[in-house]
Amino acid sequence: MRRAITVGDMTVRQLGFGAMRLTGHGDTSWGEPADRHASIAVLRKAVELGVDFIDTADAYGPEVSESLIREALHPYDGIVIATKGGLIRDAHRRAIPDGSPKHLTMANEASRRRLGVDRIDLYQLHVVDPKVPFEVSFNALLELKAEGKIRHIGLSNVSAEQFHQALRMGTFVSVQNNYSVLRRGNEEVLDLCREHGIAFIPYFPMGGNKGSLSERTIDAIATKHRVSSRQIRLAWLLQHYQNMLPIPGTGSIDHLEENLKAADVVLDSDDTASLNSLTSD
Image 1 (tube, rainbow, N blue to C red):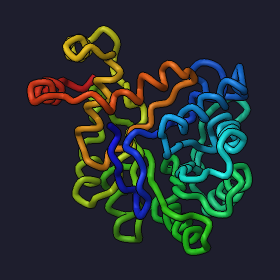
Image 2 (cartoon, helix red, strand yellow; image 1 turned 180 degrees about the vertical axis):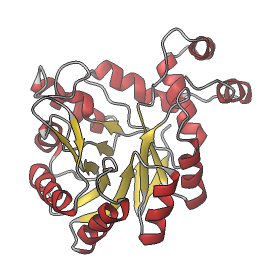
Image 3 (spheres, rainbow, N blue to C red; image 1 turned 120 degrees about the vertical axis):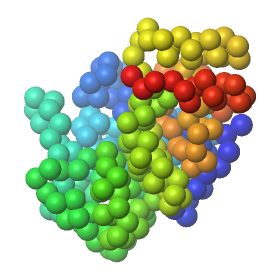
Image 4 (tube, rainbow, N blue to C red; image 1 turned 90 degrees about the vertical axis):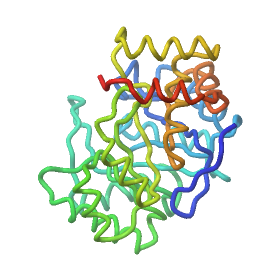
């Protein structure tokens, strides 16, 4: 059963949905989906199954994911919509950071227009721009919040140092970094979230190298519980931190249903010890 967690003053169920994979073809997140109606059906099914946290970004498509969400779910009754700004996709599909206040202000306005809202529930700095001091980017988000255009601020792809910088300047309620049972490079940032009661949103929650010894350990635990290895990876995350909010994404209703059933998997102490001991890929 998915329990409730807190993200600032918002209460959501512990498994969310990441909307990146609804756009483009394959893993490119570029352009329109191959079947727009199918992508909309996945979003609506997610909500029907109890998902009440949807994560997206203006860079997904670009712009396509946000427009899909509006078409499928607006006016978002009881649903938290989280999006991101600060990353541009150029004509060659390259991702280019832009954390300037001017861009973040324009990006926030465009996201609000596409989503059909006056205020975004959770607006996240997508990535730190090496050309702009982090505190300048974060201050721009604080100003947008003061203007009533953001309900809560989130950070993504940040270091422990940047976490501390933001903490000294103001309030943020979530961090979204790459993290999984086999990708634990952001453990220090996760520990800071634990210390300060901040939600941690692991992206690429299934991450890890195929065919590794660690993956075989996960497969053995999955066989023991008669579930998939994907469900074991998600179950570990759900039990690893009380304010962990995984956002597995998919364009398939079958995979969506499989992912959400991970909340019903209860790992015992032996399972947890084996998974905790795995070496990061």
